[in-house]
Length: 254
Image (cartoon, rainbow, N blue to C red):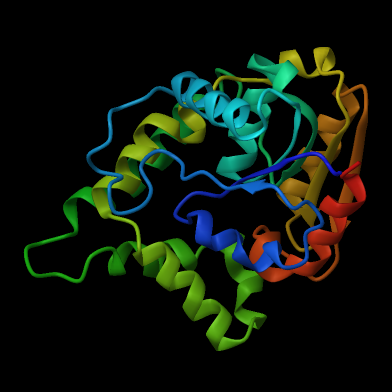
């Protein structure tokens, strides 16, 4: 029997955003928890720091697999939490697949990222007057970023489903996610990478040069790393090339 698989979604997504992978995945036991700030209750759940959210996820992993190590796969925000789980709770993870992961920022780069995140938080918190359609202004700008430009080649129905998933969250919840779990709030895990002993597959889309470079840089510091670049995909490989990503996950699953 294959190892239990845990999938962690990206920012402004949710467990449903991973459905395109499920039908092509080999493991019978799959857990896809909802991350802090996401979903209809994202604005009301207790505040958790980045490390506290990692520890909450660790409890979910342990319960799902009855203490057995899992294959952990995460995309973007989910990949950053996955990396934190590897560092903080290494016994819970047998291997990891990290899609579009940023392993951390230097103290020099952190203030600029804080300002960047603050602009998105302001849009989420200040542009929702009474009676406005929730999240629409944010969705327009978020999905128009250069990071997601490659999605313009996707069928209209695929892009519409992605937008609908974003809109299934709440503006206050996503603001809380960015405020507490944005990249500027995440620990810099790069000094810890050399101590990771499990196999790690770093995945990036070929049309995403920033995260392709980050994957290759992280691979140099990991003992058992493998880089997989997915042709025809940008940052959101889950959305743009789900079958290709599922094949990578299946290949890496014992």
